[in-house]
Image (tube, rainbow, N blue to C red; front, side):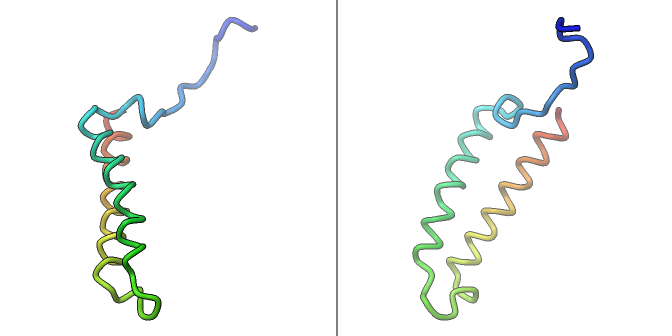
Length: 71
């Protein structure tokens, strides 16, 4: 015991993504609040900015799935 035997590998998102994917991911994460700030107070779920923010969230999920599939 104590020599690191039997440890299970854990998936690390930052380690398993390419530089290009990391750059895309960070840009998408910062664009979500940008779009959400431009949503109107009433009827915000029907606005174009809300739809764009949701599309970015879906794109982030697909990038994460691709990185996990490569792992």
